Amino acid sequence: MSELMTLAELGGPLALIGGAVYTRKAHPAVYWATVGLPSSIARLVGSYSSTMDACGLTVEPSRIRALAVRATTRREVRPVPPRRGLIRPTATGLRVRLRLAPGQEPADVAASCERLRHAWSVHAVHVRDIKPGVVELRLVGFDVLRKVKMPRRTERDLLAVPVALKEDATVFIRDYRAVPHELVLGATLSGKSMFLRNLLTELAAQLVALVGIDCKRGVELAPFAPRLSALATDSDEAAELLAVLVKEMEDRYDLIKARQGVAPGTPDDEITSDIWGLPEDERPAPIVLFVDEVAELFLVATRKDEERRDEMVTHLIRLAQLGRAAGIYLEICGQRFGAELGKGATMLRAQLTGRVCHRVNDEPSAKMALGDIAPEAVGVAVTIPAERPGLAVSGDTSGGWGRMRTPYLSLGDAAAICRETAESAPDVPVLKPFRPHVSASPVATPTTVSKPQPATG
Image (cartoon, rainbow, N blue to C red; front, side, top):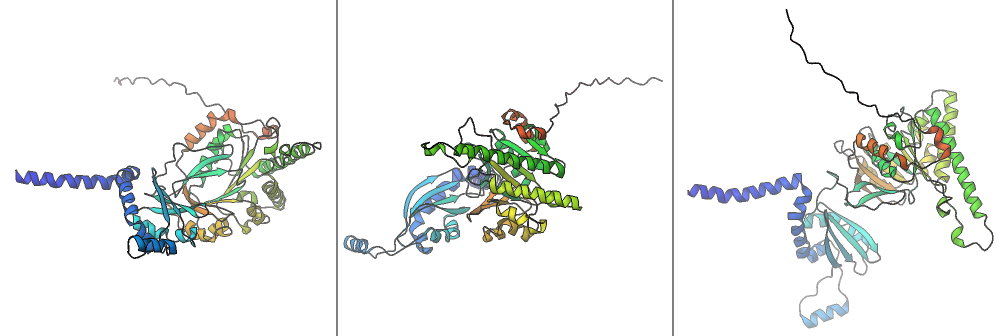
């Protein structure tokens, strides 16, 4: 009997520990909410002053404060840490705002993120500048990129859609109004197609003309044909389509110029330099051009192909330079992109503000994507493991960058979304000749299976 009691006394704690270990590995969000969150708050509150002091984030108190402390408590005056605000728990971590002491800057706190992570036993610590003198610490309790789960409520706007989850548990928003053109690089099976798939399906529900160029005979973009306003599947079609887009851009500039030629005394808010200042009934639909495997547009075999290549590249550069005001945006995808592709490649890349680099096969590929905007991100991009498809480093020409991962979306689900949103495609008359033909789904005909009869001799 005593042995059974001893076994019961030991079995309870062992089962509890085993359950906690399993939950932490299989359901990290549940573990964080039940165990990680309370313990992290206790560590933060209990060791805040000493941790800030160990990280060199304290300053000497002011003379008035020192005199007040000596007069009231007669104890030693200690260095002052940044003033801490309220701790706000989230589903993935904690958020707390700090008011910096005089002489401190956000970079001082950012340099101590790794120390803070170990001191408070969290997965990561990120710093965001809120306003002068105030920063926000974002503590992430577990690896949110291991199994991506997008928040249920995410703000969407015209040409601003959620695509991926960033490592600080915030959502990566692809905003074409803020970043008109983007370059997406990634090796085979790196998740580049998944990024494109999520982006295209998010835009499918909006009144946006989606145009595709897929010189791999359309194998990548053909499943989305019901929602595409135009699709080119070889170099000849791509050359014709790009020429039409350039002509459409010029026509839209003529429309903007006509609006600018208003009579004197017209209110300033009616004078515009892009299509977004036009009245809604006169505004043409925005166009997003997806180019899958852009290197196929640069490759040539004959002199005739070279002339066509130069023409296509010139059209792409013109769209990248002037398309924003006309409401035409570019999403350029490929495995490699650099000067070795040929004339005009570097000039085109310089116009692509946004950069997304998935796993690549060599360091020069990462440098082509990120080296000119954030050299420190190149080393992070080349260490992306092959077993985490969809993991990427995103950045823009402002110098900011960070890791993110696209959630999994099957090709069948993406194609179904495009079929359901086919009616959302706006009418752009110049694109009608390039509208892909969508065949009706074949109707399954019932087959009669006859019951086998026994053989007779």
